[in-house]
Length: 183
Image (cartoon, rainbow, N blue to C red):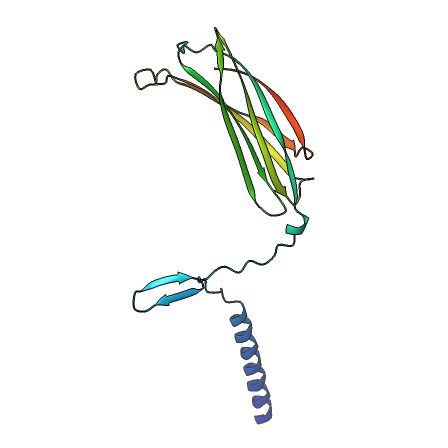
């Protein structure tokens, strides 16, 4: 009986020891910023970060070119002919290989003739992408019509729409998009 009690006690202690080790290894790590604290001035100076080389960094390739947006805008809003109409184009890319987010935007002033306004927006770009073959660029545009002074700021008109999701163009390509819109 005494021997069985001793074996039971030994097995219980071994199990508790194993449980304690497992619990200690599953603890949430303490978050901290490496650096030093000057006790005289109480100023904290963070250490320079040590950046591990990315596995995909070597595979990144530069993709450059131009995105050209040609706008034809039908003006049906009651905007005075002296109001400025502008066109903006946006390209957004998330490189799946690195998680890097790229945002490009360009704006141009439209030329207005009666109820029609036209403008061209060019976005020159150079993107370092690790997964360009599967990455996509999302294109949107904004058309804005407003007065140029506080007294002429109203009426105001804005139209923003998406053009869709597109494959990343080959390096050195100019991609042209035609936009027909109404404000």
